[in-house]
Length: 118
Length: 118
Length: 118
Image (tube, rainbow over all chains, first blue to last red):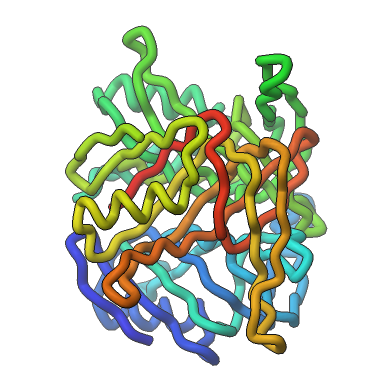
């Protein structure tokens, strides 16, 4: 991961092979970011998506193995039991520009993932 | 609705049962926000989506009744006839991570909707 | 294009007929914006979308001629060989609220495109 401090927060570049959510949570802990918002684009693979089923009170998950463009990564950082909690939703596009998305449990950076934390 | 003042604006948490657009417009009026941008994620139901048909000069609407993840809510606040106008576009995901979206006319918060106004 | 300077950057309104990426790159050069992030919504036509095929090391492109709602435009500005490089991903909705998206090569503003550069 590379980052740069800017007026409104941080510009972050996650690099190939990093697990996106773990890297962001670790960064938030290290920089002691108490709360913030996240936006980003890039490309990821091996994504686990979630849809919260309110009847079952549990997430339905789906694994997307192939490389997808990240059209939008939007979310926020808060604290749960003294640990940073990175809550983001992700929108992915495949080779034919088809789109799918959900709660972003995890995913591996495929090319790069540029993010902006404020 | 709960909110917190932060350096770049407000972090807002809409709660279950609130109508999202009406709540945001009311908040903008109360806080006298002259212009701003909105980003958010969460879950909503009973959404009315729009697509502006330029030939007919009117919106084609669609009602989405079931609970959907809000993958992205993006927009801005401006003033029209002295009233705040909240113009946002929304992207929704259903149980099988299928995606649809459009102009966001209205929708009821299903779980929570965390927003960031700046 | 119209714009307004705000605390966090610029609010920009691209007008009908403008080529979105060229207009933003020209604005970034003129205002000497060294780096920044972009969010926006609106409506565009004649969009060229890309998906980066890592095996072929090249983009697969698709032309979308009809007018689409821009549900999300997210990206950043950086510099490449002393010229501003506007890298954005776009999510589009068609008349039936169907969604597609990818890397945003180019597109013509159809109604308006409101953007926020920070």
